[in-house]
Image (cartoon, rainbow, N blue to C red; front, top):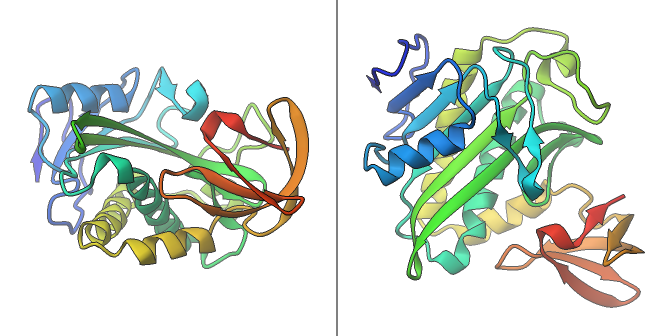
Length: 262
């Protein structure tokens, strides 16, 4: 493994992968691992699978422009750079599904196959009604292809106290503490397995398995869209990543900022 000169040798992170995490950049503190990873990518300093990881992220970003907050040194905050030239830009949501499944797979090894462990569309990780982690994928396009993808992942691990009651962590769920370097290695392996599955063209399997773990899938719930409340069932996700909700016998499709869970 090539550990860069940035700050520190990260011991015990030895993923058994072909390329994901084989270049490791550790930063004691940074505004955003996604931003750092992007800079490495545009400067051609990031190999395929480069992983940027930090103990303290001061301006982490989440979906919908939200800020991701995590206690320093207690959680996993990292970004992976991939170059998925095989994937058309129109199909980029497949990458989101693959990453969400990879994180879910990894958590199953720690929590068991608990039905409370779900992926909340598009790719937040929930346990019951509480958020365990989040994923932010930022793609740079070159014509009809994806030039590079920055896969940002934030997961609550050892943190016990949160500013909001809707957050939880592995420690809260299991009552134990975890070795972060060991968890990183296993997570990178899980990410590469799903990425290789996507690269091999097994998109039907990915789409089907994503629905199997989708939060509120085929359940009746309340939502808000266009300033109005509606009651319906999530019945799927289309090829562009829009959420399909059936309500009053009609099917409606929503982009990320067009619907809110209640």
